[in-house]
Image 1 (tube, rainbow, N blue to C red):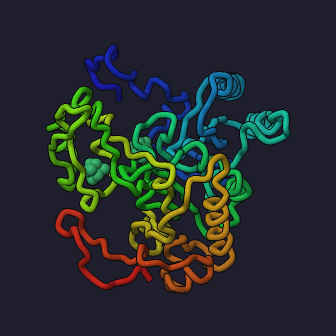
Image 2: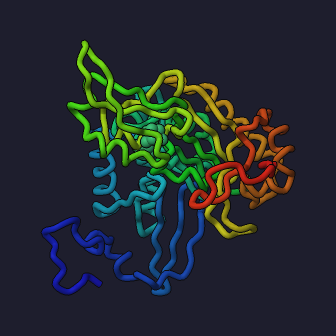
Image 3: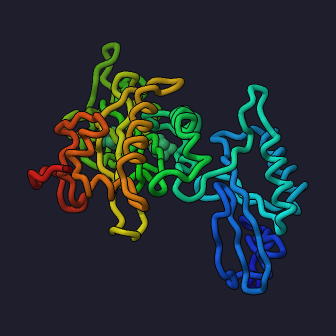
Length: 370
Ligand code: SF4
Ligand code: SF4
């Protein structure tokens, strides 16, 4: 229920105002739901009401015209209602089979000039749904890789799995463009993580003018930055020095001080992690593990990355048991076998020496990830 006396002129309006009437009426009274076919769910309420949801892939960057078209579809078929899912898909809701068929026909008829779907239906069940990702080169200051580019390139390769439900279980792919990780790569079946591999460059000539030196020093989680004085044109100026061996390339200092950039064409790239999940089904939730320590950035189509991911998914699709998630499959066959089947090279970067960041900051064991 909307809260009494809620102040509505600050922040967003209460979400209940946006419910379709049938959702509002049956709230908390749903009996079951089932996947009728890929991308289409039927939700049945105890009252006898039925709602069908049709899920379509959302584009990573949406133009105003695209958003307007989504709104037009919602106006035409769904009384103006739609929802975005947690994986950036768009869901349209209708209440009868007739309306469902009309909606699907309309969505399928909307295509780009080249013939590809504008609103591909899918993303349910044992599929590769849309990629959850961070912001990339366009919106953030510390990315080590892009989001839009790799996400588009990988999803183009995964498209047949988006539209079908032929995999052993769902495969959730996520991308974070730096280790600050505002994505969900740590617990995804496949995690794509941007990494920097070089310490920040210190721009002594402007650092003291545009940065608060104490802030830059205190921003460093490893204590790698200290104050120093350098000589420029015969004059001593205040600056900082970075102890490269202590730096973990997190970019925190750059957040505080724009004169400490750490983006580098050579140093930046991608780590591939696999086997994480949040579900309790079959086995406990798991963190993803590093399986490829470095893939270079290869815009615009990231061919090495997309090829590796496609191969992993194809081998998993062929070899895993029904309902087994990627990490469960790797654990059953053994990580050593996983590396072998997926043609991945095992390196010392894949050694599992990470236990608890709050207490351990150096190698604690000789346990391997396989
Ligand atoms: Fe920015 Fe890192 Fe988040 Fe990417 S993951 S948007 S670079 S903080
Ligand atoms: Fe410290 Fe991170 Fe900057 Fe390295 S990148 S100097 S670890 S704040």
